[in-house]
Length: 466
Image (cartoon, rainbow, N blue to C red; front, side, top):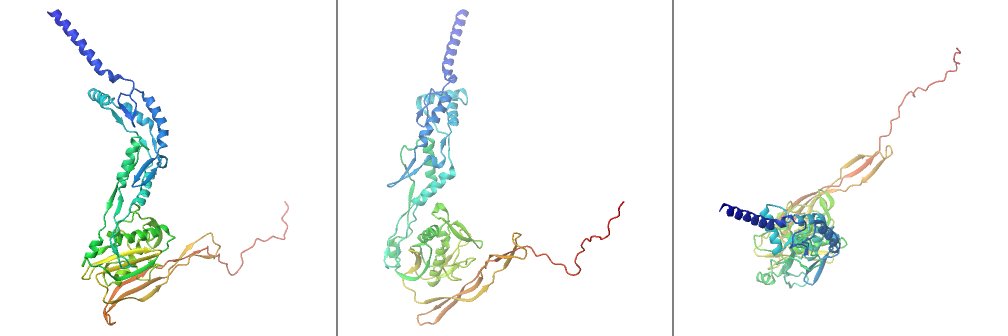
């Protein structure tokens, strides 16, 4: 019995050992495990170096394939070279090689078996210039985005202009779709549909008709330079955003809330604007012309101002004391509909003119005059700068400077007979002057008076001979 028991035990050990060896056999493979793919390319059975060589060769083909984006009937292209895209062949080969070679023995065997039966796709390790990709997507957003347009009443015809739906590109979602396509090595394999959502207007023609808004209460016009493309685009966009805004009695209008942040992602462009008293480039330059034009339409309509700030410098397109500057999250322009009926803002650009009007159920039954008084001139301070490059005593004007102003603006309201029924101070504004800057050279050397300095004399006596 002992002899047979020993034989049986030995056989069992051999069988278990053989089974264990057979099961553990994949752990000692010198190639990538079967069923593993990279970008839909089967790499099972290849060595790590063969995978790296395959990816390096495949990269040339991938870099030549554009990523195609589509919206309606328009096709957009992103060239891989324009975002510095390339496949990191060595890092990807390492990731492929490590599959099934990490973790416990059980986890490794389980992953190897899963790859053989179900397949396993390893994403590419890629590199790209994120700033360049973001810039391309921002440009695409500018082309696709369109703000909604509320129903309005036309200044020219007096008829109702129907509402229009807007559209908004989801840039974050699009970026993820593009990166997924690049990580899968599927550039050029089909169009990516742009994730665009519909933005609905706040006011429809039906709602406009129901509110009975049909009469022009006031209008104000300013002009802008159409050759300044970016600034003109910001003026038009800001006008579109306030156009058709409806205010019920007691409702406060906020320019910043309505126009929103001045960012490139919102369609605004870089243009000159006043910051800390200086004209400098900034995103959204031009939005203050719209707030200023709206301010004048509002005060001419007899509506009450809640918040308004003048610019630090005089403007070319509006009189002193008639401007309204805005800075998102810092300075706002607000007014309240203090009338007993709804009113609506109309804003449109025609050529180089910006027209902003206030519409209501009936025309204004009083006359409004805006008067500027007590205008005072502020002389510019003189700033002197030392300049050693100038000759002694020489002066040179670097900046001639500009005068500043102080003004008081009144609103005078009269009835139809001309009798004054209200007079109020709208604002007392100050516009800072520009400094006069003068550069001056070194002070000239002073000439000493009295006895001239001693001069070394030559003795007529011959030196002693020694």
